Amino acid sequence: MDNCQRCPSLCASRTQIVFPDLPEFGRYCRVLVIGEAPGADEDAQGKGFVGRAGHTLHALMEEHGLRRGHDYGCANIVRCRPPENRKPTDIEIGMCLPNLANTIANARPVAVLAVGETATRAITGIRGLSENLRFLRYHDHDPIPAEMLCNLNIRAMWPHGAKLFPMPHTSPLAWNRNAPDGRKWSAWGREQVSLLAALLPKG
Image 1: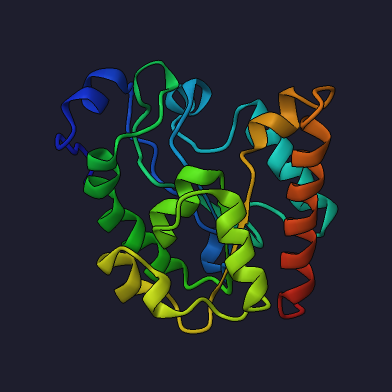
Image 2 (image 1 turned 180 degrees about the horizontal axis):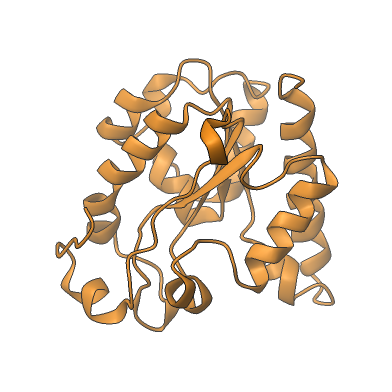
């Protein structure tokens, strides 16, 4: 929807709806990056992943030969900036998930990179990044089982054979490199993107 009014708090907070962007000129979307919600920079510019954390993510993807607008596209669980950058509520997420399902269907990615716990949990229904990663590693990153997709809209639109890769939110990578857990989060993010890139079809 170009002027969705379903969530009063988000409508009052946003400057504009931040729509997903997919590779340009009809290029094949190898990876769809899914985040939590637009931040201040995204809300101002009308494009996702353009703030400091987004730049960190794009640099990490480029290290592995993946370019935004060419190899991968970006979307968020919700399309409007929450007040004071709070996490979106479960009701707000539920309202917006049909939009995300349509984006996934249009993109038909080989892999989905879920950035942060909120984005990952919205897809799988499993709380906690560690728990999601443990499950996926147990299955050796095979294509995600349909029964693991908690939302019926996303389950119906999930591309056959698509793989899911959860990673920590890129804010700790961007802002907390010197924190005791910053190095751990950074290494985890790099590991997930490296594994994703290695498993993608060539070309």
